Image (cartoon, rainbow, N blue to C red; front, side, top):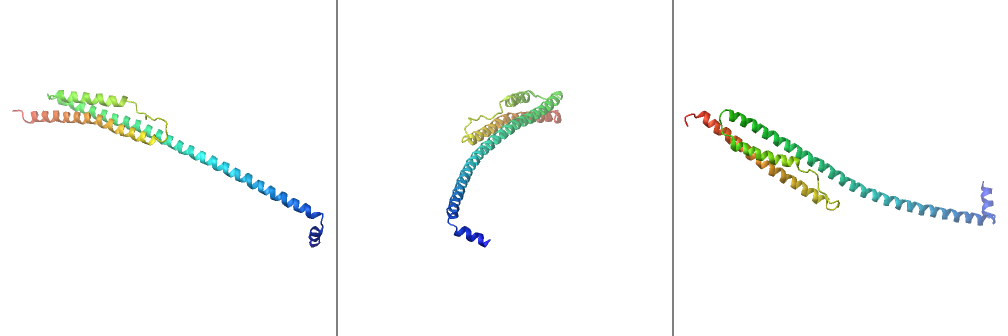
Length: 180
C-alpha cells in the first residue's frame, strides 16, 4: 500500500487528475451547501407562513368558541329567567286563590317576560369586520354588550320578583290580621 501511495504521488500524469477531482469535489460540496441553504431558507419561509396561519386559525377558533359560548349564555340565562317568572306566576295564582291583589305583580311579570323573550329571540352571533387586528376589540365590545343586555333584562325580572313578594306580604298581612 505504501508503494501504491508513492506511485500516486510521484507519478506526474496522476497529479493533474487528482487536482481536478479535488476541485470537482469542492465545487460539488459548495453546490450542495448552496442548495441546502436555499432549502433551509425555503423551509423557514414555509414555517413562518404556517405559523401565521396557525395564529389566524387560533384566532378564528377562539372567536368561534366565544360566539358559541355567548349563545349558550343567552340561552341559559333566558331559560333561568323564564323559570323564575313561571315560579312567580304559580305563586301569584295561589295568592289570587286566597283573595290577594296580584294585578301589579302580573303586569311586572308580563313586562319582564317580554324583555326575556326579546333577549331569547335576539341574534346571539358576534359581529366581526374580518380584520384580525380589530378582532380583540370587537369581541370585547360584543361581550360588554351581552352583559348590558342581560342586565337590562335582569332588572325587570327583579322588579317582578319584588312585586310578587309585595303581593304575598300584603296577602299575609290580610290573612294574619282579619280585623284590619
